[in-house]
Length: 254
Image (cartoon, one colour):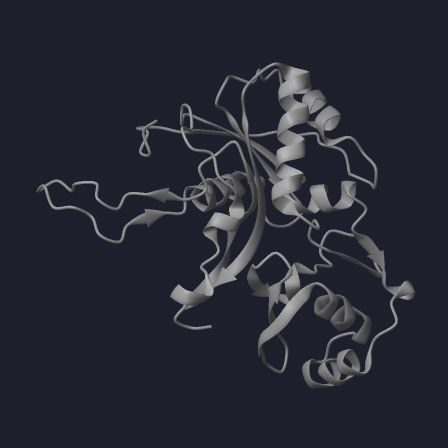
């Protein structure tokens, strides 16, 4: 496939219902496609907001059930956060990378470095917190298999979440779960316009797809958690979102 199509189409599926634990996302997406009179084509990519995946998987936590540890209480006092929320942040992490007077940056159990372990309270019921899927890549694989079985099309799935970036202001959509798509495209040894071999260029393609999709998905109350991305063609070497996480040996800031 070409890594640089001359055009892409982004279609946000409207009229998606609020998702609850145990809901069948495949059915909800299929119904939304039907209501919008949109047919899937082979090699389309469906970008799905992390929130609805987490909700369907029962990752919505009642803070009233959370008992904060001593460390959670200490860090809550330092950051001004709810100790129960900090407890969830710590449970979902393997280490605290940085902490300020209002923010905790962690490395999650799946290797992603992000604010608050991805624990979120936006667009959910008061008194609750939403955790990331336990295994976003597995969630993407499962959803892709179910969609292909139901709709008889070969598609890719990207689970997207918005997060900040080092050295840059503003949140941007990132891929935290990938199936049927090349997450990382290695262009090393490819030639540039002047015949020189590229030595370091790798493209975070799944992140680029996620970022593009979140432009029409929205970041607040739009209620469009699924976006169809069309125009890439086939993917020769599908990978997963873990491919995008820089390993310790090449992480200069770890």
